[in-house]
Length: 89
Image (cartoon, rainbow, N blue to C red):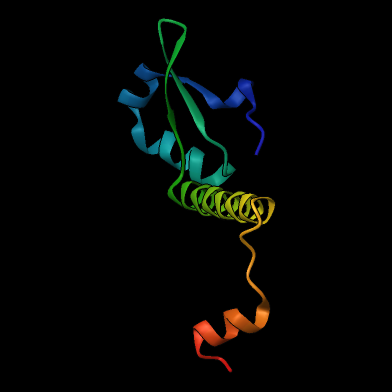
């Protein structure tokens, strides 16, 4: 999801004039839009599906990092113990 500055930078006035067009742009391209005011970035608009996907990926990566830190700190648990805790065996 790489931003195309020629297409994805939109002045706030364009959002005010035709918000549906900007929303459809984010949905169709699956890229965020940078909203600008007086030539400076002020906000980012992103399609809901892309936002949810990014949040899910971010949470997964945080869980992986936390797991790796636990292993580094010697907090790993044997598989048999995990199965017992979950009532699998």
